[in-house]
Length: 200
Image (cartoon, rainbow, N blue to C red; front, side):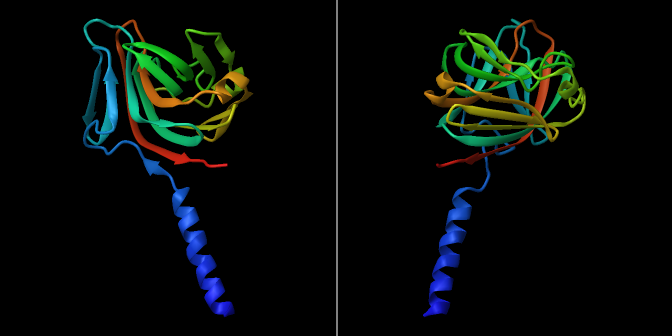
């Protein structure tokens, strides 16, 4: 009886653990599961997702078809040229007008890892100068974003960048989206986009 109970518990715990495992949201081959917004360039090259300014040099977005409420996202990125981009969460789009919150991905000294509310309150929190030294411009970096309720925490290359609690964020739901900033001359490579959904 004891052995049977242990076996059942082991199976249950194994199933529970698998439900919380990180799942890839980019297959390394094409844009299946994603939607393009705008005329800027999004393509797959050597197993990496690439965003690049188009001739118009306007804002562009690539959003997940699925929505995510509470989750932990990890993603590797490498910036070229200007490298001004971002990772939106709980976002919704109408054309290239986006509502939601952006974790900044930008050149050195430009608040990578901070949280900005588009078409709303603007900057909610910026990382300190010391934290911003974690960015390795032109090299691969790893961003981790954890969103649970109204609590948002970001890490860049293992360094905690911000810790924010916000009531408005706690009420929202929506997609994860990558951004190309306006202005032209921007290129960012992405890989290893993985999401762990969190259920409280």
